[in-house]
Length: 94
Image (cartoon, rainbow, N blue to C red; front, side, top):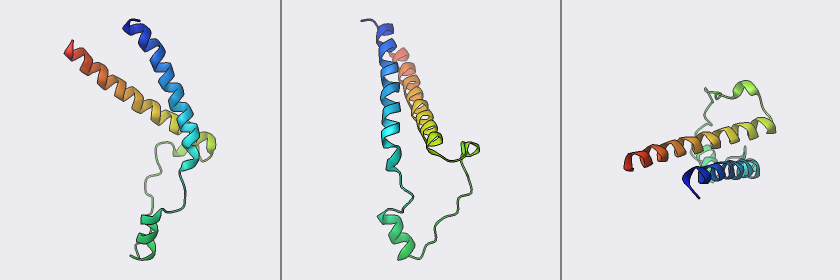
């Protein structure tokens, strides 16, 4: 199998794995504070920070579909950046 055939099969496989992972892990994030935040808020008397930046996807609103879309978009962006980085480095060594 040459390099083009490998890329032809590997990139779609990575994207499918990323999409499945994003959908499965979507429910892991919680609105409840974790242990460190809880201690900081209750015992140290530190107030929860106010959000000043809504995010680049705030115009889409809220909902599960938006969360899935933004998760998949973020994963795809990281994969493309990583692929580009390794592609550029591989070209320099040849």
